[in-house]
Image (cartoon, rainbow, N blue to C red; front, top):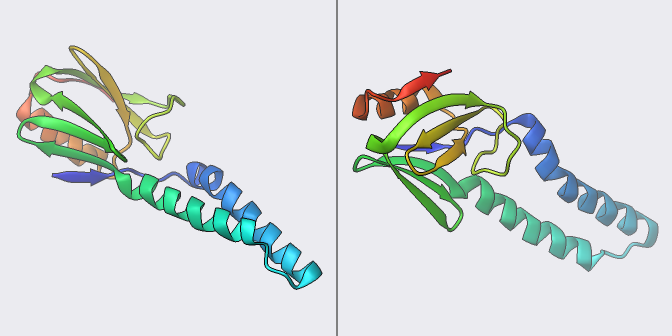
Length: 137
């Protein structure tokens, strides 16, 4: 089963501010001089691609008794049998999560912060595979 990352309005604003600024610069420069600022156009294009990769590149997947967290080109694999704890988190640390409404998944060896859209469904599926997971929600 695959899950997408939840997208918070605050995170959206932070991610979209640079592109909004570039569009504003592009329009104001064009209105003042009737010339299109090619630097702003290139920035908008490249930043748009990067934002798309970030949004569509964050996937949480449960496959073959593993939780796989994909963040662009990086995959973190966590055996579900080794998961000990799932708890609520509002941690600001960089993570493969586009929302501050996060859950921290702790295993024997590592932990990961995620923010799935269907959080309860993902947790139920993890608990179905490993009923010993401690929930602190």
